[in-house]
Length: 206
Image (tube, rainbow, N blue to C red; front, side, top):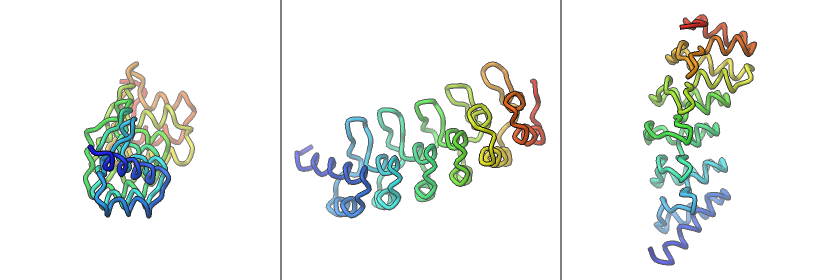
């Protein structure tokens, strides 16, 4: 890599991180390496996603930037967009068919943290991607378990519960201790979520 190439890559990373779309577009036209990385292994697209710089991210995607390039912390643009509720960016990535087999540092897919944080519109889009609604992360939790265990039981968490159950989330996939989603919901006083799980066939015990 020449000094000029390295400098161009660094300039692209800086422009993407700050949302300087005109500079991003200029560098793209000049043929800069779209997969240039910073010391943490982050690409320009990942930095644009992190900053929610939608226009810059779309420009990078249109130019061929990969939604699958994994940073040192295992984030990819796709995984981070889902986790952060970057709905517009997720929508722009869907036609590119992101690699759904890649996992974040917790062993999860994009859906699990999106559900935990109740990013309703993002979850709606993720569910159209063919993503595994019953994937179990390294903590032993599915998206449904994360909604109940880490959520607040409010309207948005109730909505994503309904959505994932309708999409085929298994209401009886227990955590590592054998505690079912319904039992967690009852223990936390999340009555509306518990009712939805029960209607979907959820049980208190195996």
